[in-house]
Image (tube, rainbow, N blue to C red; front, side, top):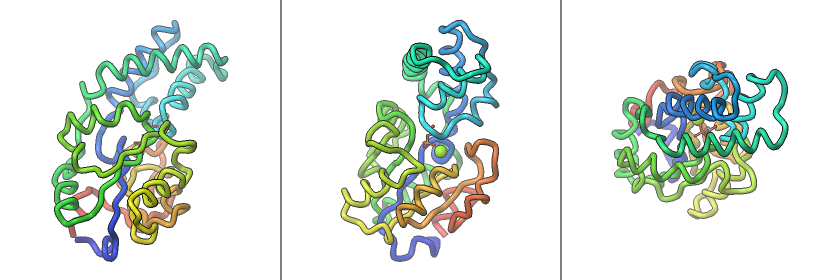
Length: 222
Ligand SMILES: O=C(O)COP(=O)(O)O
Ligand SMILES: [Mg+2]
């Protein structure tokens, strides 16, 4: 095992951009939602830079791009409902696991770590996606962006998970692809591990100064 895991008991993983490359399906959901409300549709590359703060903010960023100004509440609500319907209908059509993810999760679970999933994605999508990839049973606890009063970069979901599993933050690690994961991890008192291949609003994740930057989850196995 990598030395950062010494004395650790809990490893919390981000989902989008860390375990799964979900932007192709998220982009289709956003494009169909904007089509439904009669607006121009963004490219997949644009959607990639908007992912990270949950579904409401994703839809708001897309509507703001298409309108040239922030959407009114009714349009935001219609756009969000359309996105949830379209994305929910096919969350696994184009989504893939990143290399080494399944191998690393199984090995870490086997080694006795408690594994948790802490995503800003709405809760209802978590189980269908993890189940599709055969990973659901590996996680002791999963938390979505709408599960609690606050989402990442707030430390609230991380502290919630550590408390629920009765594991100290100092014995916990947050693994993610975006500045929101690293900020939440630092604020919660977790060690932080970053992956460079995901979605970080077009910025290098090294700027967030994680404790460790690895190129694949396999690197955690040492
Ligand atoms: O849904 C998002 O905006 C990002 O989800 P994540 O927290 O799993 O990266
Ligand atoms: Mg992410």
